[in-house]
Image 1: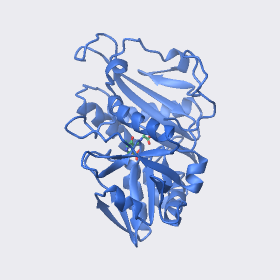
Image 2: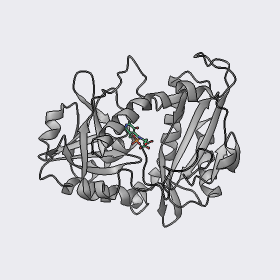
Image 3: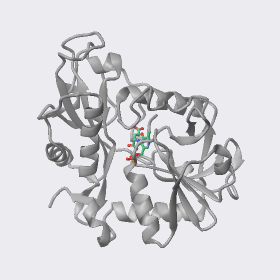
Length: 322
Ligand code: PPE
């Protein structure tokens, strides 16, 4: 899946980057993207043995501000721990690497992608002897599901791919290999003319989007979809707090797809997706079939908070130039 970047990537030769990543923090050195290269025998490339984060920095009155930075660094290390990676970085060192990369690139707003992976010392599934590496890239990403999806509401399709269950994959880890599930579901939805996929678990309960958590509004209650296979979303936690602070009743719940079909509103949340209203699921309109007022108001509130416009939430921000 790809968010709108400032250049097209489709026709670029493999050796040329069009992600505009600029300078990359690579094992402690800040180097041009073209020099941040790895061996084709990299373990992570063969077996998906990497863990990553997605973080955003926003332009604020005080320059670039990273949203809930430390929590993302902690979750990155938790993902590494789940995979049994013996990392030596601290979350504070990862915070610093991210701040340094933003400064080196003179970014004001960007998407931040730290990645930890097993190197190329040996092939074979056992990664025991392979060294661990860390990189941080900052990318100029726009609206994840596109301007249209945000304005009009996105069209979702229930995926024929089920969400991996916790006895098969460690779904709480943002591990590269786990994302084959998301890639397949997202591609299926796109190929069928939808904006994004809705993934169910093996029993038919709604899990999450390919890269988003889900909320729905019914009457005066906002339901935060809960499922043990879901990523513990930082945006989900943010939206729950913002909704409660706005005086809305919030409950965590499991749900089946028909409960979403009959909701007054549905919206998706994630670092990349921010708050994206849903207009339809499986071609059934949600409410009147447009982006709903609650979802749009929440999107607006979220964007105010992440860009530092509400002092009460400044604890969530790391001002890069302070
Ligand atoms: N579920 C999944 C499966 C997921 O990947 C994400 C983030 C979320 C929920 C929301 O989590 P949080 O960002 O903490 O609110 N997906 C990231 C990857 C997107 C991508 O295309 O890559 C993201 O939003 O950065």
